[in-house]
Image (cartoon, rainbow over the protein chains, first blue to last red):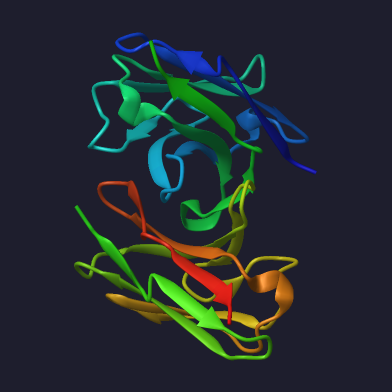
Length: 118
Length: 109
């Protein structure tokens, strides 16, 4: 069974960089599939952040491009997200997910809440 | 950029009801549509992909249809465990970008 687990600090100061990892078990990310980050501000809807393929190809939400970096580490079987210059608007539950057919997200992590506060 | 509008945004229904949620795209572009169910405090769960293909393990009371700019998710007979928020998601083929609809919350009448 494919399992994903997010990890990273729960609190980040404004203007700093948010860094999250997603560890994958039960599947080797080097075997294929695309891998994504999605976030959800408290009480709001879902927002796609970025997607990475095992060969390093990356895709970003245009509204966040320039502040976001996604990359895969096949040696650790994980992929990661960095969001720079964070503000309170970046406070959200961050999910990592595996993309299946048509980038539908068939496996998800449990999510991790990241708060941006002084 | 494509925009997805879900309607209604809120729906009150009873167990056994047939429920339909609509997802309208701002333009017809090549891509793929999926539907998710999300319960409070949980990650979304994939229900439908490719507009109409049921994800493995999802009950057959869920179905999806549509093409172009209008897609629907139907629950043929609402069960107690179906009260949740539902989201549509669209992947545009070029450029490859993902957009989510605003969500439809289904509550017990």
